[in-house]
Length: 285
Ligand SMILES: [Zn+2]
Ligand SMILES: [Zn+2]
Image 1 (cartoon, rainbow, N blue to C red):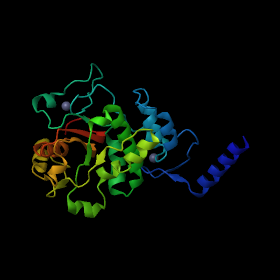
Image 2 (cartoon, protein in one colour):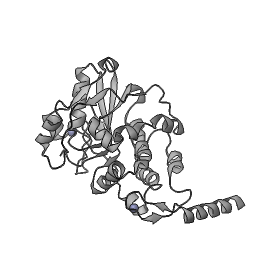
Image 3 (cartoon, protein in one colour):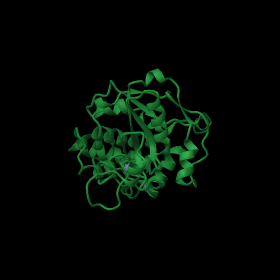
Image 4 (cartoon, helix red, strand yellow):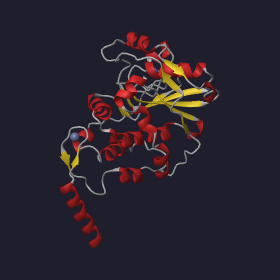
């Protein structure tokens, strides 16, 4: 009891001296002890990911970095969604099935999955992460991705995890590849989750973006597809022959970049390519 009081006192003093600032909106907030944060999320995770759990899991995990208002705005992907590209159906009726787009133009990758929806709120958060120097967000977002990976895949079905590459010029300008940042601590987090991912290999340099693609914003769907075509090369094809690959990126919008990466990897002999992003747009833009 005395220890608990002391701990609360220490927390209160620390908070008073170093108040926690929301990484999304910049407001100051209080960490509610024992109910939010990384450790709580670890405890609430038990082996397989429970479908009834994601809301509180995502909320509790993000609350260490975001105020209650910002954390509660994050929308979790819920079925039904497209079996292939992961598009979330607006109507909540029916089971998971193929969407119209995947029926008319099948994708190169097998499946694409994401834990949360790429809406305005999440767009702002990703913007803070990529452009406003809030790279601490890589930790909770990477953990969300890892939990989704453990939920949606048999980890033994994947040999290589490959981040979607940035063009070198853009990499220099930004200083990091956001897709790699999201997965670089996976093995460490897996240990905390009591999962063994030692045989999973993260391969950072296999895919290369050979030319700058103009920003996708403002382009129609066809232009986005053409924009990325032939912009990706496989650097060391011997590393991917026969391998089962998980491609990772921050967001899935048109799917054009991951589809082009998958096409290149398959052309060099990859056994299959799957896709995991942290967020999924509500339409195939
Ligand atoms: Zn906030
Ligand atoms: Zn689809």
